[in-house]
Length: 64
Image (cartoon, helix red, strand yellow):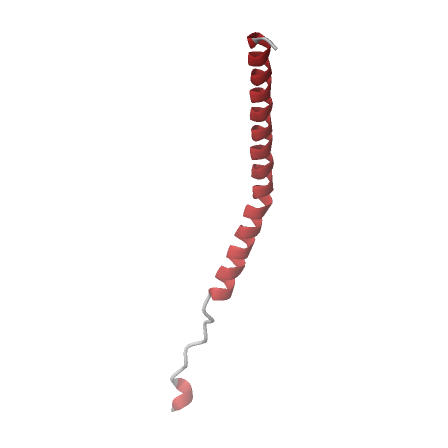
């Protein structure tokens, strides 16, 4: 195998590795979208659950 063939083989391998990395990052970003949506829904539910219950203020009319 000559030097030219070695350089071409390493170049093709580098391009393939780069494409696989790009594909992996793209798939991970697509998987993160539904997870982010679920986090937003759970955060809203936690805010709703943490909201204090409001009780009506006692009236002074009933104590006379």
